[in-house]
Image 1: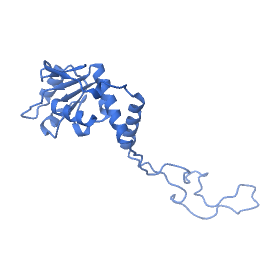
Image 2: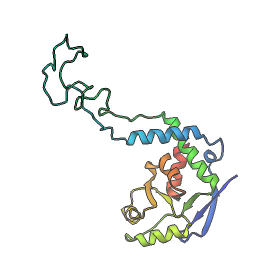
Image 3: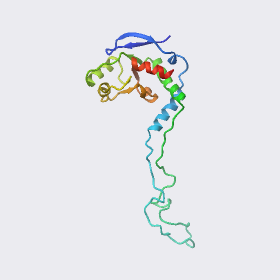
Image 4: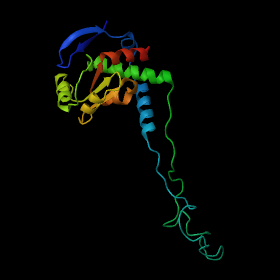
Length: 206
């Protein structure tokens, strides 16, 4: 059975525990990871790109020359897309790009991402963090002790002290356990999870 080490804030091993079956059994589904990341990136799109059609462009509606007898193609007003300054055909308009994968697919994608980090040896469990004051320096030192220059820290619940202590570190991020996602797990090289947060993740995977 695979074992996971539990470390303190100094990066020293305190104890160890068995890895949950959900992170040991089954393959890493790379295609599902791709689908989950594509969904997240699509959901983040603002979708506010917009162009003007011929009905939106400002200009005269006068017919620019007579219909027949000129030898030219027939035209209406100067706002036609073929003219400089005219409207645009098939241009982008505000739209919603978001969509959702089935719940089972999202759960299996997260499982595959966590499994990948565990097999790489880049998933570490921390004893619960206790900071009495907001100190970026202390959190930077903790990440250094963990040998995690680029890491995602997952905590069990809202903790303004920890969240504010990490937010100015350019290569680190804090997420509450309910916000853990495939994109951020794969974006950062190391994944650090508190004991309480890891218990909640086990429940999600089950």
